[in-house]
Image (tube, rainbow, N blue to C red; front, side, top):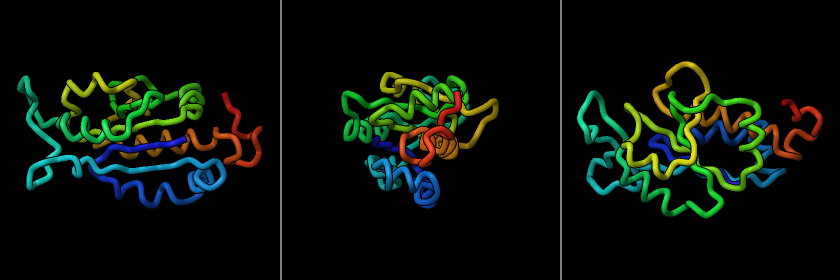
Length: 165
């Protein structure tokens, strides 16, 4: 399994992805993690990833250009793109089971008031981890990764303990 994470704060993932069960998933099950900085796909001197909403309104939204360019370099036919969103489908154990069987996941961590609406055409599913709002998708992504890793065969060592439906 390969997990790519599109974010403007890749440093959030450095430590959490290198200990405990997640580290075992890398070592025993060959799970590969890659935190990709969306700022690396900007073309202005300030490396801006935000812009005013095209249709007007409050706040700022994530630009589509850095997201699209980053996604183009990693998306394959079997890739599933997940957007962390307060308005997405609520995370369940059943969803974690399904995600743990995917071969390539891309987690999109938004910030600001959300994403440019044009980005939705490249997203397979929006996921919400609860009835509350976070500042961005980074910690929601970590919750999902933590929940998935224990379901991958060989990670816990005791397969019985990972089967919770």
